[in-house]
Image: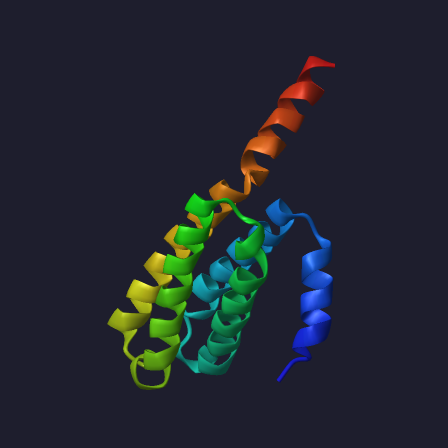
Length: 127
């Protein structure tokens, strides 16, 4: 098991949008790693890490985002509970892949990083 206190200390140094971006990246990695049925352990670790990321950023989020993050955390918990038995099932993994991908995009949008990047590109084009 990784040293959670060191991971937490590093994670909470970043501004909330960056932390949400990190959560979105973990969800994208779940999507990618779930393609291979041999990746049970890394997927379980990513799900556990994503749940911690939610725990560490939700308190600073607005109420609507907190509700959304809680919904995601519940989903991750359900996945982790079923993971050992269901991960070999390609249909189940396909569902996880689809949902994790959707959640990754949703959290990335919630972070505001996409809008910020677009604004930076538009500003650069005007100069």
